[in-house]
Structure formats: C-alpha cells, structure tokens
Amino acid sequence: MKIIAMIPARYAASRFPGKLMQDLQGKPVIQRTYEAALNTGLFQEVYVVTDSPVIYECITKIGGKAIMSKKEHECGSDRIAEAVENMDVDIIVNVQGDEPFTDRESLVSVIEVFKDDHQKEIDLASLMTRITDWVEINDPNTVKVIVDKQNFALYFSRAPIPYPRARELDIPYYKHKGIYAFRKSALMDFQRLPMQILEATEKIEAIRYLEYGKKIKMVETNVTGIEIDTPEDLEKAKSVWK
Image: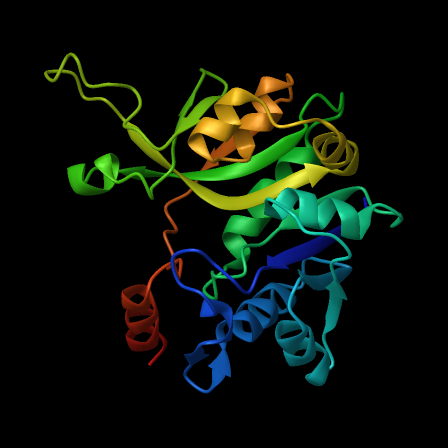
C-alpha cells in the first residue's frame, strides 16, 4: 500500500487565529508538526495542504512539501480530498496541524487497521483516548465518541455521550483524537456528498461518514499529546518542549 500523510493547515483558526505560525521553541507550530510526521518514517510522502501563503512559504522554505488549496473548504477532509484527487495513493493519514507532539505509536496503530482488513470493510480509522475528568467530559470543545463491541464508531458528539442516567455504573468516556486514516475512495466520497443535519449541528466532520454508512474503526490509545487550540495550550506546549 502507498501511504502518505496530509497535514491540513488553515491559518484563520476560529479559537486561536494564526496559531500554526506561533513560535514553539524556535520554530512555528506547523513546522514542528510537519517534522514530527516526517520523522516517524511511516510515509512515502508528507504534505502540508493550506490556504495560507505564509504557511506554504514556511514549509517550502525548509525543503518541505506543501500544496495550496484552490478552493475554500469547510473542513480538513475536504481540503485533503482536493489535494489527493489525482494522486496514486491507497491510504491517506490526516495529521492535525496543531499537534506538534504527533507520535509514531499512534500513527502505526491506525495504519495497522488497514493492513489487517483483507476484505476492505473499513473506510476510516481514528483514535480515541479514555477520559475521566468531568470538566473535560462536559466541555463542548472535547469531541466524545461511543463505539460498538468491535470498536466501530456509533456516534460523535460535543455533548457527554452516553448520558450518565445511571451514575452508579462505571461508564467509560472516550475523547476523539483528530488523527484519521482514510481509504482514498472514502475521502473522495466525502468530498462529493453534501453535509447533512447531524454534522451541521455538531460541527464534527466525522459524522458525515457515519451518516452515509461509512465504517470508522476506532483504536484506543493512552497517548494524549497536546493539541494547540488556545494560547494557554501553546504555553503548555512550550513548557513540555523544554
């Protein structure tokens, strides 16, 4: 299988505009993420795909591979789909641009899903990590996922799912981590299929795949990392990097 990594990099993030170009111990966040993906040694190619000339120049200036989006896009999947449409690839791994601590172990776990899927029944693979803090469980910025007995995703939500009606039960809660691995065919389908009401309500792109019957295999991981969504996250990342 030909496996590549795509890092969607939008400059105007709603919660922290320009965060990908913020300094993280001497290098921009997006450069740190690009180098982390490259250094895993798992991919034939690693690209940053962006709407920003500033981000494009940042990556190409260091000899990296970057692609400028031709259209405006609502989400990372659409941005990646445009970039890979004419590429001869089998699996595309979406690495979030705001995760400079992206690790090899997590990426290996989503790639292995496809190596074992001889019947090609799985459309996507993604990661989840167990959470126990009620503040995080109730935080709408934390996307939660529930799965079936085979760890296929049933639903994603910003609300606490499942609702803890029976508080005496030890209910597991899982946070969805934004690393995806796609079959190219699933990604191309995503691009042409219109957004439906559940995705529009929750603002979670993974829901579109479920609404159209795609199968998403979730892999549990204990690696939490740091997603840079706020200035406070950036300061935390700086202290960890030291």
